[in-house]
Image 1 (spheres, chains in turn green, yellow):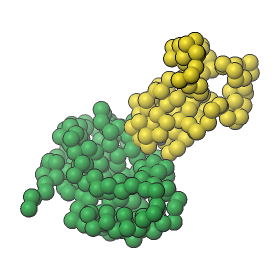
Image 2 (image 1 turned 120 degrees about the horizontal axis):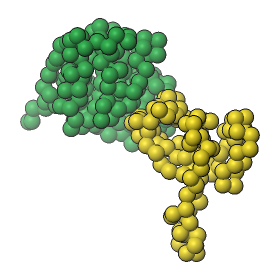
Image 3 (image 1 turned 45 degrees about the horizontal axis):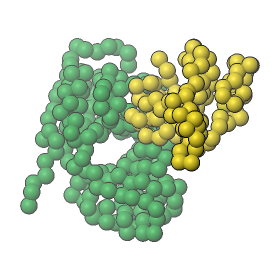
Image 4 (image 1 turned 135 degrees about the vertical axis):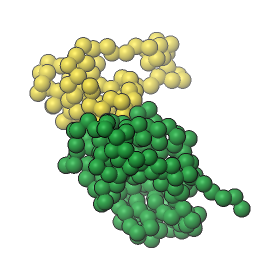
Length: 188
Length: 109
Ligand SMILES: [Zn+2]
């Protein structure tokens, strides 16, 4: 048996915000008709979460659903359960025009938290990170400096970032540099 | 800075989240067309100083193609709309007419 490891093995940095690689996370990309009752049922039974509206994430204990586009969801599950959940979703989607794929090992995840978290992201992404504009439960696909990334904010003021595993080192360096202590811009 | 609202995900995306896709509403001339038609389809493009219609892709975002109507001189955006149309919808034309009463672009006005 191989021993799965995440891209940066839990690398961490602390400055005006804390940056931590999030370890192994189960992720399934699902494309299909998001208004279909069959699809809604399939993802609900896999994660416990209801269908998120545009630009939002629905989080539950061990899973969640991120709204990626009008016909795409990112299904969050526990890493150990991803194959079982994928089989469950595929069974639920039988006869439906949809495609689900395990992308867990193609991705890296990071957490950014602490006082300066909003500033860290604002330095890297063309997104309004003010408290009024970016609220808990919000999900945004964007770019982080030169690479594609997506993130959401949970209810404990922690940002969760998803990027391609191949650029995990680059993203960690970006986040750490942006989070250098005494580098506050003071906007948020 | 050009900011376009993606009609598919509602994000107000600035230019670096988008990819420009050239002139909108081109009619394709392929097999069976004349040499002149094929030449025009490949090479002839509008280059207006003013109202223009373009295709854009929300590449660092939802990934969808959409249309935008804007002014090339002032960067004013009149609106964005679905990719699933062959011509600018009426509300977009009205929005342009409100600001530029005598606009015209190709066969549209
Ligand atoms: Zn979009």
